[in-house]
Image 1 (spheres, rainbow, N blue to C red):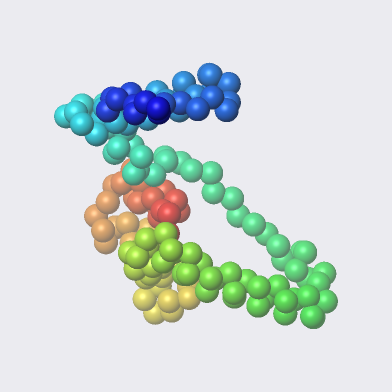
Image 2: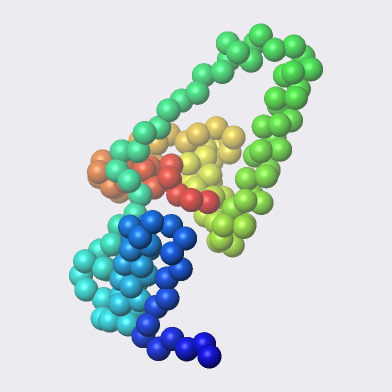
Length: 150
């Protein structure tokens, strides 16, 4: 006769060392307790921190002009069409992430694009002044725009 586990009892199958199971068990237990208790200030702050962008993220420019100039015509065309496919494929990935991400992406592109020529970037200083943001708030907006998971 197989004994049924009690309602509050958890069964752990030991396929890994006990230390790994205890980490998983404690995480599950903490999440379960958080779900049934009133959120504390620490729990609320953790949720808020999870949805904020990092300050001063590392942003690197990529200069490929020297490498691109050494490619043959056929290789250049291949690189061009691969980049176009990646650019358009990004929208598919965005929609798989969340339905609103493509709209957010379009908003960011529109916001930072020039009104006279959408393919050119806008003057960031004039955008900051028109938005009436101080330097710190503007940097936070740029950090978020660079890191937002689309």
